[in-house]
Length: 417
Image (tube, rainbow, N blue to C red; front, side, top):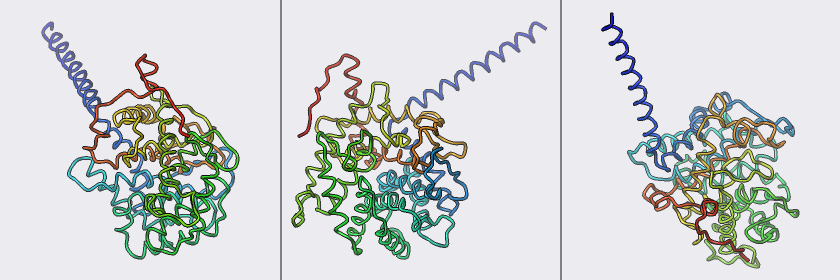
């Protein structure tokens, strides 16, 4: 009897040790993930429910629509255009990397295959996932993010499309000239669409492009900040649209500043880039030692989309000299971990849910739906840099606020004039 009890206790102890060992091994594996692996896993998780379904023409059948409690009444079908357009703008650089046999390479290849099929469904009138191109002014916003995805991933995402699909996009983009954009950051949406048409050699409207350039330059407030229209609002729209779209459009239209536009001093590419670099420095300083950032202004449900300009500068290898690769990567990784290390920002079907950090629908603005939230993908642009790039291989460095609060020397700030 005693022998049986002893054996039972030993078996129980063995089982407990095995469980503890497995738990430690799991934790060790998680700790061994590189920053890049972490970013890839999160972006892949964000993208899979959207692209796996849309590639089969099933997104609108499967994705539940969640709108703000104070929804403004526009057609709720805008959700799918917002979801797909914004996600692809963030994914494009990563999907543009060449195929390889790594685990990441397999993830990229799968997403790209799904994306190319999804692009076709988006403009096919016979598809259940044909998007809401012709019923609401909101379309011009997210069509611009689709155009931006083609600009960012031209060879990987636009060139492989079949001729009919390309013709359909050009037609849908051209028909959006019916939309009179709001007198604010919206001016950049038709400008981005027309810039894409310019790039592919289709008829384009230069007036729409240059008007946005003139107004953005007129609305520059100083020290890296633009006003979102004639009146200044303290929010993150410099991140969500103004800096990235302004710089990317000017770069293409002026051939990186080498082409002088007649009677157009506002299309100054080096100046626009310098302003975005200054704003990127401010964004880096906003990241706390704990990986949080200030919540202010409208559209905070866009989560990590706040850091798009900083991500764009890193991907384009245009970080200001004050910011180092390891510093920016460490800061952004801290934010991404803080925001997406658990399941709180996903619904049961795997799609992003209304809120900032969790399900918080009451904070959603009147124009916000759960498709809007895929602006969060725009923080992941540096994944377009190869794994052996210094952004990913440099040692992690403390970012400005971390140094400041830990009593280390840190650079004093300065303004850009």
